[in-house]
Image (cartoon, helix red, strand yellow):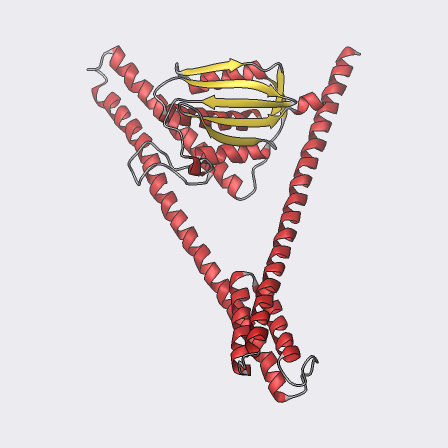
Length: 372
């Protein structure tokens, strides 16, 4: 009976996790749809504002006997600006507004809609053509800009990948060749040093490829997480063993014995942050774990140079690195962007703040086992 109760409790916990995960993804989708709707509303309001300003200018200038040709040009300019700065639909809407306002306010008989004359029809068609052609031009320019950004990103990736793959591979090949060529002339300590070098460079290469794969999944919204209940102490012990640095100090101040997370992914996220801190700091790096209500907070403190206030969000951008071409300590700019994607998948938050000395990266995730 006790075994059945335990199994039933685990099944119920798994079911709750699945429901929670489904609800979280549904909330994200609703939020995305809401953001898109708000963006469309803003574009529509911006289009109306542009055309309202153009109409007001035409009305004001018409009192100084501005000819109809001048009024027509001003309204068409408004259509072009709306088409270039909003969207195809915004450009068409601006063309309709411009044509109707010109017909209603500036052509006889005034204050009536009348498009039965050839001239009125031509004016209406010209407005629509200006709006459509300008919109298509704007769409084409945006596509070319995106294509240029993609090309620049591909160039950056190829340059960085070639550098970050070549370095550990060269070290591995050099060490192995030395072992094969001089194995009879090397003493035990020298052979061990070469083998340790091969091992460390292979681990570095593995972490790099893992980050590259995770970044690809994040960019294509294909990152999936499988939440599980795990011991916090065991999780931190595995992380400490993976980092394997005497400069890492872990302080577990959390009262939670268990945490609910994707163990492999979140370990990768914390490893990326700690590895980055060790890379840019020569002193101790501290990982402090604590509670914030029902959430668990992981803070990584280092004593490096920190960030300028204007660049606190820059580390999480994909392919943003402090390295200039092939020089500097920075990598390709994958680690922290992957970390942010993993934390977001856990419905958590990640922030960077400057301390008196160095900086602090804070990861907060909900501990869903508390709610259960």
